[in-house]
Amino acid sequence: MKPVKIVRSRTVVLPTTDIDTDQIISARFLTTTSREGLGQHVFYDLRYDSDGNEKPDFVLNKPESEGCRILVGGNNFGCGSSREHAPWALLDYGFTAVISTEIADIFRNNSLKNGLLAIVVDAQTQEWLLDNPGADVRIDVEAATLTLPDETVVGFPIDSFAQHCLIEGIDQLGFLQRLAPSIKSYEENRSWKP
Picture 1: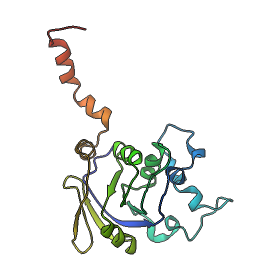
Picture 2 (picture 1 turned 60 degrees about the vertical axis):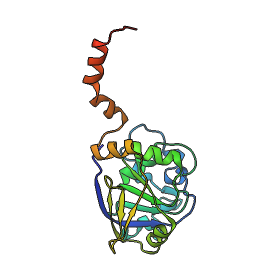
Picture 3 (picture 1 turned 30 degrees about the horizontal axis):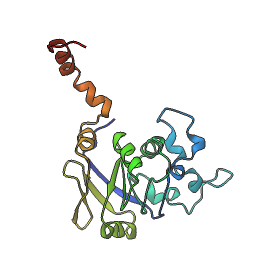
Picture 4 (picture 1 turned 180 degrees about the vertical axis):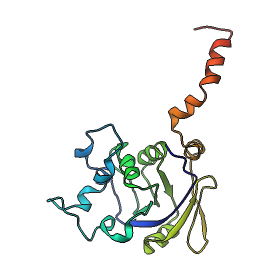
């Protein structure tokens, strides 16, 4: 994982409510345990017609969405089944953050564990973001703030362990591996043996 400290980007807005993990990446694409290449399938059934041609009216197929790293979704983003492939697909596509007023707990946890910021904001901020697609925003992970183009700063909740891992660019296993010398020392020097 790469460290995620500051994210500056224009936003892509997908205002649909109840975007579930099957819409993010359909179950038919879950045949791999690799993260690479999943981005081509993100929102597949919304992006492409039955012949595999891009739907020109879908937001990710529009030129102004090119290079945007922040996705603003409608309420209840990431609901549905638990699948780590959903944040993997969003990351592989190029997103670094998803913002909504409500993000499903399992999706949010999977996202944070895999390096995708899943940010919950208040309704007023959400409404402004939905009404202003393509807005240049700044996310500061350490400060847990989102800064809008008019310099309005909005705080967001983030678990301190997830925040630490994002800033350091490590996952849970990486965190434990960093502690290996201390764990080994404890095991070797403890007074009791299992």
